[in-house]
Image (cartoon, rainbow, N blue to C red):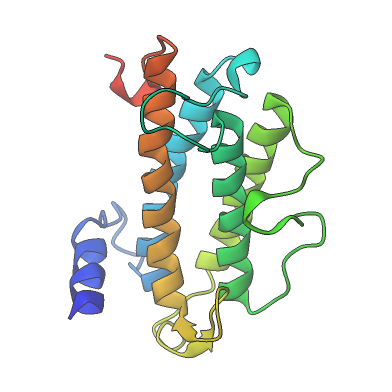
Length: 183
């Protein structure tokens, strides 16, 4: 039931191509959703000054949370993990570091580049999803269970938005209006 509801929501938010010759496919619907996430996250990452990429709230209940830069790097690393899972390949060797990403990527410039490249990789993977393979069981990237390409594509949209909310809060705590909130 949840899968059907998720798929229905994705299909309902798909924009029908202006050119009737452009057929709406499962991959095009999913890829459009990933583009929507990307269009929110990349500008938010770019909005934080380089000297604030190490910012993490420390007061109240904020204990042991990732810094702004670590949040962005985590999103990118998981994008790669999801993409590799959809493609059925090993994680690209340069990604390393699991969900935290490579240890040698630390500056704003490096992290934003890593994020952009992760979305390019994710788009490549999403575009391989077809009606024939969307629900085919594949090895899940976490644990020993199986999943589907469709489930991973839904995760590729939901997971970054969870962290986007945190990034917005970090931006606002530093007096920065998130790009998506600017008029």
